[in-house]
Image (tube, rainbow, N blue to C red; front, side, top):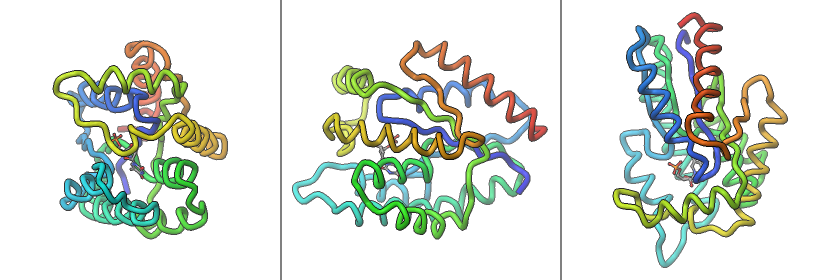
Length: 216
Ligand code: TMP
């Protein structure tokens, strides 16, 4: 595949989606085709699956059901959006991908990491990001931002994950950092406790580096 695949990962409240939008605005004027997408929710069945995974309900779905819904969305998303875009030579920016499943369903929910590796491989056909930007933030700061965001107009209702306790978010954070420690050449850890523009400066530099490396 001739395109470049970049994923944005991090805790809820880490600012990764703001940074992805900012990066996309900067890249939209370049020659390369830009595809901006997200998980869960990037496939044609994505809106329904996203709602199933994120909405609070009286009878919560089980961790395994949650995992399989996310992977179903991912399988469809890779097949219909990400792989064709990469084959066309596009630059694909994806808000969350397989690392989120390792961090949330693995470290957060406690599901077996081998099982997660297997279903991730089945869903993606082995596709891996060329670069992952991990927005790392202190749990207290992330929770403070989420609480502030919850009251503001135009924001989505808090999801099942937003409403988890600090110890869940702490496990997710450690899960992400363990991935970064295991794969330092793919995963760049960005200190997301800092102001948006400072974080954005790091993002710009890393994206410029990888575009230069891949010549796009
Ligand atoms: P978002 O707010 O970044 O769009 O993500 C929605 C939620 O989905 C987020 O709280 C984490 C969760 N999620 C998982 O638990 N596992 C996954 O594999 C993905 C992609 C998302």
